[in-house]
Amino acid sequence: MHKIILPILFSALSPLMAQQAVGWQAGAADVDITPAYPVRLSGYRSRTTEHEKVAQRLHANALALQWQDDAPAVIVTVDNFGVPAAVRAEVLKRLAAGGKTIADERFALHSSHTHCAPMLKGVLPYQFAADLPADQQQQVERYTEELTVSIVKLIGAALGKMEAAQLDWSVGKVFFAFNRRLKTAAGIQNAQNFSGPVDRALPVLRVRSADGKKLIATHASYACQCSTLEINEIHGDWAGLAHEEMGLRFPGSVCLIAIGCGGDQTPSPQRDIRFAIEHGVSVAKEIVRLINRPMQAISGPLNCANKEVMLPFEKLPTMAEWKAKAADKNPAVAYHAAKQLALLERGEKIAPALPYTIQVWNYDDDLLTINLPGEVVVDYSLRFKKEFDSVRTWVNGYTNDVPCYIPSQRVWDEGGFEGGDGMIYFDCPTRFASGIETIIASAVRQLVPQEFITRRMQNPPPPLADESKK
Image (tube, rainbow, N blue to C red):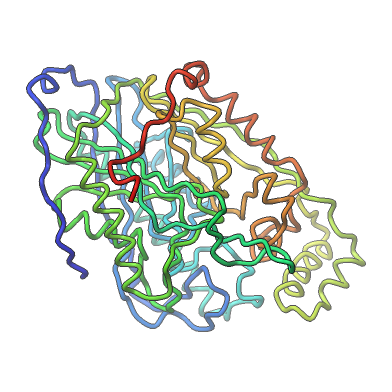
């Protein structure tokens, strides 16, 4: 355990704030999801064996929220590369069977995207350019089932702890994320691009008991891949370390760490545990700083909406083209093509588009959250903060599913790994067709209340934090 001394002050409500009417109920829970057996890890194709040891315990966390007599909503964060839509759907199904129905649009499941967590069935299935041995595949499926059970129990525990609560939020800033798409004469390289777009905002939700004396939960997200480490060991990376640090400072409170639109953002420096600790502690320190300062109160109701759109792929290769790709010298290209050929030879069809479900929540007119599936590049969060009221908009990626990279039009035009080359490691036939940013943005705009559109010009973004000039 990495103990770093942080301020542990926690400001209670002022007498004036304490007199405010309380309409919220909230409950939070934490569960250890570390496997007790060897399992392949997801995120790096260079690994060839099951994990070697547990360097840090993994967790899933839940926050249940309810405004007055409305239906409850649940936020879950999971230390994993990506929890698939199939697991999310199964969780909702089992909750309903147990009498704890959560509406689909009122369930936000965030993956921390650590590259040091167990592989899950259906996520990044082609990363190793080979089928897993049968015994290793069995362990992946075993862990997928155990995680599903754990999330169901976790949500039940959070719902069972509901109490009167107050919600507020603020935005800080941390600095370890850098754009990783560097333009060179040879094309886009995976290297630090100091002039590339970034979003270093750290939005933080604080949930306290009605009297303000108890910290129930904190929830934050940051637009950066959770990929500091490349070890073949179980570890939560910077997000897991931020969660751990908050647990040390506020025992009994639950900290939920999610990822913003960080598909093309990487932590820097990296590849050493000391850097992961530094990044995690920087997030925790900023959370602590914010929750000890005045924050913006959040009222209800909490309105939640989903909209599914189809993101079309480029023209699919012909049978002859798939056969040529299957003979490619690049093992990843060949394996991916062989899988597509096998599907066609079984008489099945290759899907021409990806189903993509966009989720928008608004806490009355106090806060807008936009949840997007996949490894979403930073352009989306920057765009939506410009289109909508920037001081009240919070954008997350890696939510409810992680099917592949989601490039903006700029990234698609530039190409590179996030622009399309990385698709061969996911269960996608080819890169997207041009124009998916327009499809996504149009759907988001349909879901966002007009209030957040008409007031955007009235609220120019303020400095994010006192430390913004450092």
